[in-house]
Length: 63
Image (tube, rainbow, N blue to C red; front, side):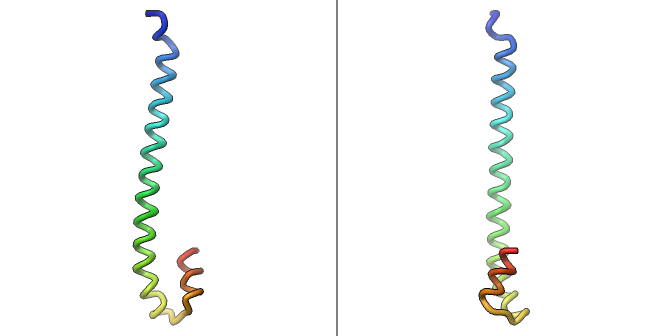
């Protein structure tokens, strides 16, 4: 079995790299969704408490 040397190790490393990238992308997507949900709920109270216009709320939420 000469063909299972270094190329097998490289293939396994590439698979682990792809798996790690997929996990990180999934976590980032979950955090982005959570952030969007929190901000959409908070924008209602920001407008009332700070007495600001819709455009100002959009700028504040975007920053």
